[in-house]
Length: 144
Image (tube, rainbow, N blue to C red):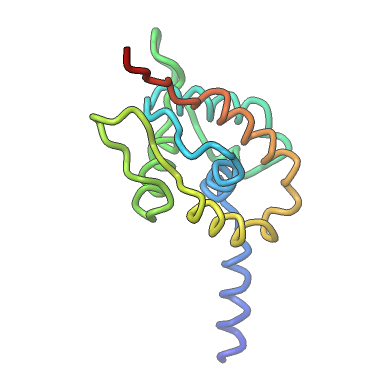
């Protein structure tokens, strides 16, 4: 009976979701700050889904709605931000602060956890990381 539970746990533990993939991509980035503007997150994930949906089937679980003039919107993107902030893997978005932060220690923990599990998607996840870096680069605020 215990062996059955262990087998089920191992099978469950190996199950990868779109949340795992996108969080791993963020953790691979050298950036520690990401723009907190929700529309930018929706645009970035939309581009990711359009580019990698066929190669990474888990991304097919992300659905978008379209309403002009807004960018594509997705409840799953909102869930991504909520889940990784609740888990403590990113600093919670603050409406008064323009960035979402993910420090090196948190990134390392995610990398260690996900590297083996997502080995088959590593090339695609690295390209997803590049999209996140490009689309979510925080606007630098300089004092004059």
